[in-house]
Length: 72
Length: 260
Image 1: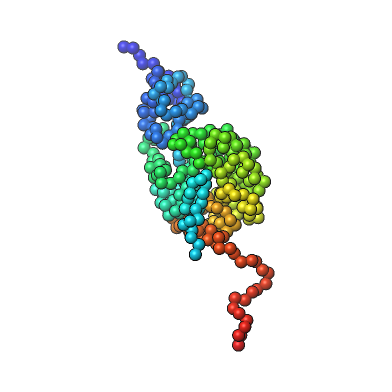
Image 2: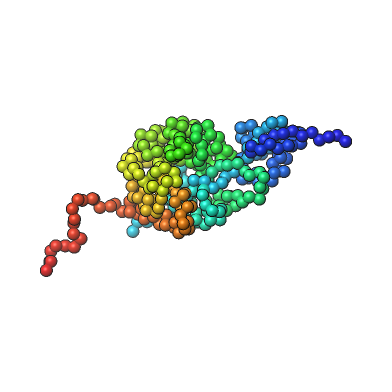
């Protein structure tokens, strides 16, 4: 059986192992991120949420997922 | 009687009936925060942009408690100490759901939380160029307020005192000078401690006040939210009514004619 290759990426400062060739959409789905309530950065660039299934992730990619919380 | 219904607060061409803006930080829970906002009558609330907690997927979300379709979210750059961080934060905020009306706050010192006005000016200019409508937290310096206006700010938001200090308005003269020189919405932001501080701000001619800690950390936040609502209305009504001149000596209220 062919072994599934994994790569390491960082999401919100935490290292995560994901299957190689995953796209951003799959990763966000696994994390159950409510897309209409967040913004996403990939390597410090804002991502158009409509295009996430076309974005392939690479080793050491840094993803930031933010939302609104209480603040002054 | 003053018709306060027609006396709307207009920011970036948007009309608001309430002149009280409330922060959503420091509450014990999101439901407490939502109830306090309802009681305050605020139509604008400030919110912060932070990382989603990816390990606790069931954590409650602010948007589930405060409906952004009913209450205007004002994304804030609290916690940013330079222009780069502030711009990054607000670009992300815009991406969440198209927010263009934002509050810029670039801090310069971790202890007193005073704004770094050089970074603030630079950020205001950049954000305005990108199409943001920027409400700007600033110090109470009339010259800086003027520069902000020239840099494309939509509202000037001078501090009353350091953020969260509860000291009330420390520099009434400066606030009055800023009032005289600007036609932009002037909103006191930060440092209020009790409802009467809001009344004073409104009586100085401010267009609104922004309060967070004074409500969230009051022993009874719901009652304090209501007190601030009434205080802002009272102050605005008092300002619009035209106060009497101050004189040094007494001036009897009853006529002297006909004294027995």
